[in-house]
Image 1 (cartoon, rainbow, N blue to C red):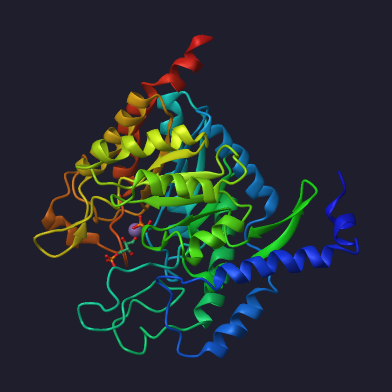
Image 2: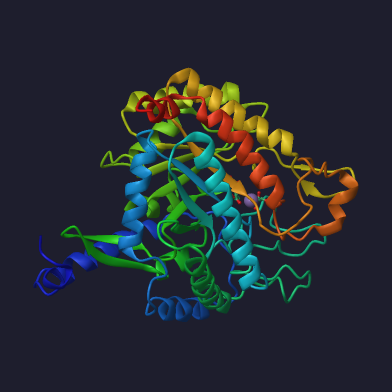
Length: 421
Ligand SMILES: O=C[C@H](O)[C@H](O)COP(=O)(O)O
Ligand SMILES: C=C(OP(=O)(O)O)C(=O)O
Ligand SMILES: [Mn+2]
């Protein structure tokens, strides 16, 4: 197999590279939802140019390793555990916070592995989860909504809420330092991969590189190993899907209760053109009350299409509510019940429930209700720190995974590992 150095020196290589980058630009010309209104487009261009000269944060050989793990998940031999903050902030990209999240993810993985007998690949919502889609353009004060630290500040003043392109550079360096901590606390083979929602397309474009792997030049998103498309940006005629389609990274897509089985098949055909097991993760987030009804026809149609996807349950985003005292929150029991519904559906259809996508932190926050500490509405104010969605704290996270492990263990994957015993 020719090495990338040899290939890159061939006369036609520049043309191949230009062609791939041209496809990326064409995808970026499509309508894109949830992008900030930057006040100074020239500043955006100079930031994009600067970021494009920096080394990627995720290296293609690591990204390829994750692809191999996800192929195992898609084929029922492994589980995927993904999670972290809803919105990482620059102020909390500190050693203690990152360490707390990563060590909690390790503990959760160990509990899931121990409880199911299946190997687990861990992916953090980490080192890039700085951009947030919002339901409304304005907040309750009538100010532009906070869209994540990569765009503007959570501080409620008109000046702080004005999108600032310089924040993309800060995000890059915060992600770099976060990765340093992740690597320091994750000795091989407990490698933790990075992921975030590929929302802010200027940032994603600036970090995309043409890289030759296995003798083939391809576009690698360099901002993280795994990128997902959010519920609010999954339009089939939009830029987010078109960009993701071009990338060699494993891709996820959130599917909310409005997703039709026909749409799910279109996503699979667009985002897994080569029919590669685990290339695509379908992250369903239906809500506890609807998962048992809405998921089966989607799973049936996708299975009939022949594509081998990773089925992952996000039991957080369909179960958000406002407490009587005004906090955006979620109840542990609702979260646990959506996981149960997800596993029941996959067991009934003979498909592999591939894993979980959670919002959690290792910090002792009081953002979600319930769990063995019985956090009630009046406790929410005690330590409510998120700038966007409520996260499970360390104790609730481990408890949820322990409960989930019992469900994930009761299936064919577990029996297979037991057969040799
Ligand atoms: O994770 C994210 C939130 O669910 C999303 O940003 C929407 O939040 P909002 O309804 O508070 O805007
Ligand atoms: C915004 C998020 O989720 P969704 O796109 O599913 O609403 C998220 O994961 O934080
Ligand atoms: Mn969220």
